[in-house]
Length: 243
Image (cartoon, rainbow, N blue to C red; front, top):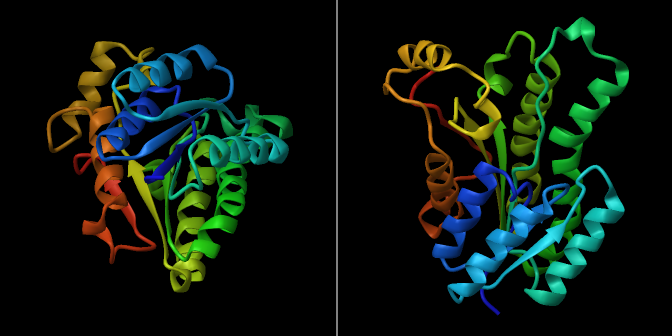
């Protein structure tokens, strides 16, 4: 079997772009989804029609049994995971004091603990094989912090710390762990912003444009490649020099 990539949150804009790029790079792709099955299946069908092995895999990253079931399905249909892209996540914009304990728990469980548990389970085979790559999708707010996105910022900061520590622990086993810190990426998640608001953000970005999902996919492609073989434990910021 060839190389196998597992992309969580593959039904979203960034996840789709990453999955499509990895398929071009020669990976068979497991498209993780939680609620949006139709989107993941549509992408799977598209890739299969092009002769690329791809499967849509139900995976609620806040449920360890759902994760283990997804990984078993991937191993059965594609093989052991060589590359894990922890992309699934959620955001919630509100004042910190307006969050309930349950709100905070949902964000942390999804954006941090979920990625940690998927990684923990996938690592069992990677360590045995003495090879593997994990890429965590974080945010510039995990580095800088964002007003009204306190829980999200905390979770994404935790993801960066998780990356650094896990890379040190797993480096001797031939496994690399890196992180991509996304700037403002033009996705459906940000579609509620007016063009005026977007223009104001663009004015603050030295590169003069919003990021695209392909910008993130390109970064994942490079970090996963042999060209980045000596890059480990790093946070690669893809934000057009925004922060």
